[in-house]
Image 1 (cartoon, rainbow over the protein chains, first blue to last red):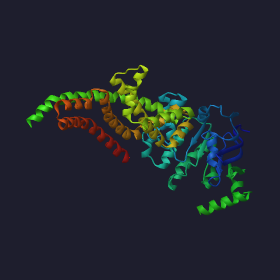
Image 2: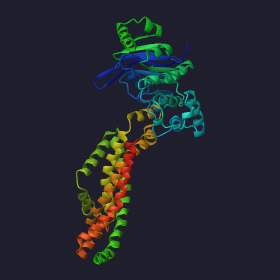
Image 3: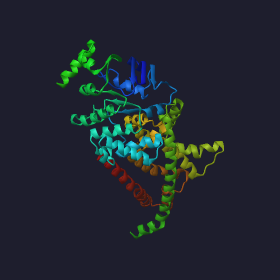
Image 4: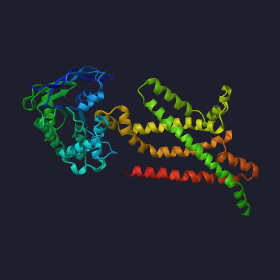
Length: 247
Length: 217
């Protein structure tokens, strides 16, 4: 059995009076890709943001590679191991694609510029953007931007990837190129947690699906169980609503 | 006409020399303002409550009192505590303090105008807050700040004229002096106006060009 990368125990998060996460339990094994689905406002994105401490959980435990993350943990180090890709790309607009990718390796991992650039070019090639190394973000399409963002994230050699609705801001015809990259990563055994609205994609790449609603995990299981034989009424309703929308 | 030429010959070099003092005072006050402004901005944005409180009080106190009053407090008022500053130093300190408060607000607005996602992306890559500021936020904020900051520089040039009141020999002081000697106020002050315009107009053209460039992006 492969080792546990991440373990959540009763994770809670509240913004003031509003309870967003009401006790989430989840275990992520090495090499596993897990898709988190659920209606908007169910706490999916907040869950990801609590993992790398962009938000501070108000209760419960996050255990990453055997270490419990608390207020005294070194968040900067934690974040180098847990890469995150955002819905809005958040590329650095004053740097080229290559500049975006080498920034953190040089200044955080402290590798030399030569090594960082060599690694970055390989990563850009991996996401199909070798020839765009010198382009600025404003010269790239949404899909290209998101692929640069993935390369930038991979440059820190993360052991867990958090993908937060990474295709939601893209024009429909650009979604495919980004999902291709994610599919490759999943095949190569990258451990991933992805929040997504692309049900077909979730079904194809995820080893397990987590269905969240109202700040709790309602159902967890392999894709065929979740999509073909949903147990809970809430999941059945959600799937019906989503499928009606796509058809 | 001949009369004007004579007046010009007699007083223009004298007043124009004041421009050197005006520019010196502006430069010293600008450096002071940027330093005080940066410290105040980071204090104001800090999550340490007392620090951001003190910065807020400083900005409000400065903005709610006339610069001339502050100049008099520094130059005349401090003598009660035995502190006698020479006029240029007193003017430099006052204008730095005033400029620092206004610059802080310009800097803060610039930093806050950078998309929050930029900071999150930097942090998610393991960058510390100071590193994220230096490499990601400030370079973007600088571009946003440049037009309002140029306007700030122009105001600073004009505000140095307050130093006339404590006899710093800048443009206004010398014009006032020349005008009381020659009794030709209109002609003399027109010369002063031309000197101010020659310094400030190119700068405001520069600010407009920057704003246009940003609008077209």
